[in-house]
Image (cartoon, rainbow, N blue to C red; front, side, top):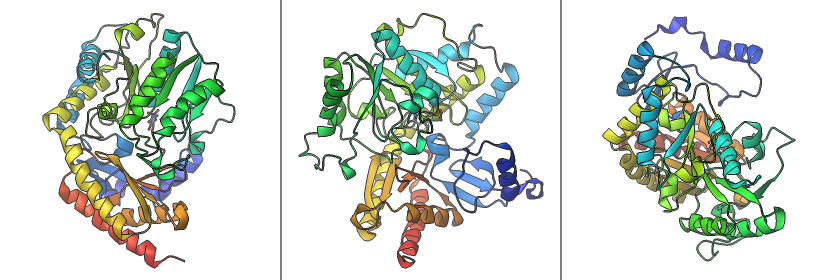
Length: 436
Ligand SMILES: Cc1ncc(COP(=O)(O)O)c(C=O)c1O
């Protein structure tokens, strides 16, 4: 461990950030800390203050920070062979692809690896065009699929759509945001109107020649928007009727987060292409997409990603999947998720500020509202800062940045959940007392 005097501290980091980084790289908190170390579900700042991490680097640290079994395998590989690219044969890439074929839904069994979620989605969209010979796409309101030209163009959140000249041929459909239903309907009487609208959009605002719909099974950045299970069955039927592929973006939901290995499995629907990144390698950069034999066979022209299939990151991914398996982390996500959700619901009963609690497994959100469901954006920031000061880190998402987000490492225990909800309760009553 480093002596704290050798750290430059948050003020100096902010000064350098302001001088040397592109200003779009923003950070949380009015008074941020310098994070210097991670262990399990904890992060530590340069004063050795401990923080319970309930955001996990945005849904990445499923096995917890610096898991010793993963660190050991990465270290061995770093010392042996760091990089070659796919023009030379190495074993980790094929071992990882084989493992993914075993755990992915249905007939998905052929992978392409890259280094981020944006690249994974970009590749999946290209593959859908190659296979169908079509070029249009459908996407959902409140979605986030990446930062590249095309993935930003299929992103349905103004906050993340920096590009004011997006790619054309993309139509958006309202998603299953039941708390703020755009049709003013109520589940289950709504007959899942939002899913049925997809057909309307295909017929009214596309050429009919659509390559794919890209969708997050639970919308992370949109505010943990969680569709009813039958949503995807209806969507699949409509897409099949129109020869449109279903791409599920599991970048945030994958690898046990929601209490199943992949979130789409809650619905029983098999996607045509599934993308992944984030949690697959517990903090080392791996992204990719997986599809079936038939669709894969349409991508024969050379495709290479310099870092895709890198021996170190593939070994990290294999080690992460082993840890998820060995310690039953998918089951733990389900059990602990229920426990946390119940506790959040009980806070909702007592604090009017919590308008809705939603999500699955350890991907949960609490939407904060004032009167008439007015998004409580300022209060969300106050709560995040209050909790950070008391050693708890959570996230915030949503189109109005008013959804508290809980995505801790999947290793967490009831004690940690109790700690978080106690601090959250303190924050909620603090906000109530200080209301103008
Ligand atoms: C659902 C989803 N897709 C894609 C991305 C983009 O991934 P990356 O930042 O690795 O490019 C994100 C990032 O938060 C995401 O949440």
